[in-house]
Length: 340
Image 1 (cartoon, rainbow, N blue to C red):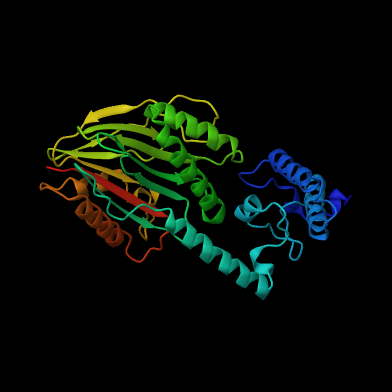
Image 2 (image 1 turned 90 degrees about the vertical axis):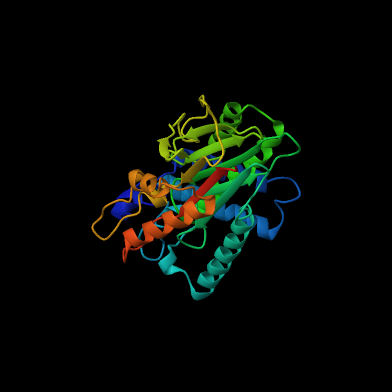
């Protein structure tokens, strides 16, 4: 075992957003699965076992998460995605860099395939969204599930995974699968989100969480809305913009918890506007944030707006507000209008 005093000063820092104990448990579980009868005698499996053992040793001696080439910290998202990573991005070989780029391209393609149709018009409702990832992959979650049959409700979700990049995109895909598997069970919306929270909590590392708005629209015009710690939705009704409250904690913080549901009856031309913090926290060159109030002022114009027009106006305004300042986060918005 390595001498702790000879390791670089940053070697003993915990991996941000990760638990050594949980990483250790996952690595031990990998080793157990690799040691199954019929596998353990294969050379490729033996090599993987050696890799797992080496990662466990690094956790024990405090060198886990430190690049073996330059002694700099390895990127957290890469460690969470693959605890056996041993070098930082800057020390990858040209071949490894090309392989990583191909993986990112594939991940981007897979993630794009999970998105709903850009305009998901359903009887009685007009739904549009814009999805603008900061990089090849995103931690924003956006989905629309059409009614399963006549008189059945439509479901929608919009949320944001903590962090950015590959690790956030993996959790986003996991959350997408959780909701897709739960919606057909026809649970009350609050229970659906409670189940999703429990499943998400059990499969994520500590300090990984997701803010989310989940909603259900009935053919009669009733909106059920559950907000798990996400940016507050805005409702444009009769020329006034109402702010709808948060009803529970983000998913993944605790495995148990109750989620209250708001119920509203939407009338013709009422517009629901959802967004991630990539919109509200967009900054200009002076460090000023765009903010909820400015979003409300844009969609609250004194005329009827289609869902597409509301999104276009808001994105054009935030772009002008930001001017030459660089974007710093994924950005997703969704607008839902009750048809006349």
